[in-house]
Length: 151
Image 1 (cartoon, rainbow, N blue to C red):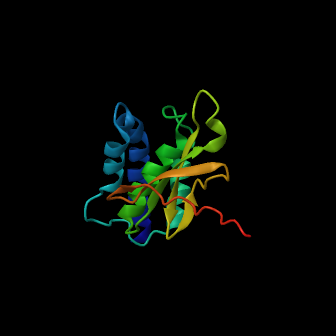
Image 2: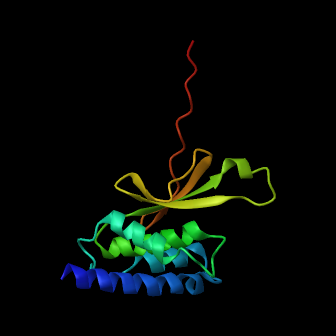
């Protein structure tokens, strides 16, 4: 039965990997994330490991024709959807590269977190987190505590 579930998973993932660029076209971030995070009440892929899902997402989008300039968003949306379909509660974190602030174009990144640990597309040290999407709400992360001056 697990083999059949994995085959269905891979087929659905392949289809969604091709749909995401069309769904993202002229759509704001909130509506795109709502599509990804609302798979309904069903969990048809329950029991599939999160690492397996992350590997399959990477493989499904390895040669993109569209959304080449936003691979982490495409992978994040897919991973969010399919992890939720497997019964997990992932978060999608968004950040801006602080070194790009002085450039003409900002460099942004997103990554998937599960149980407090990055699962897919971990950020670099130069990233400043700006948003966290948990599937039902978008929140602004708490700012890092300011260093305390010692006397």
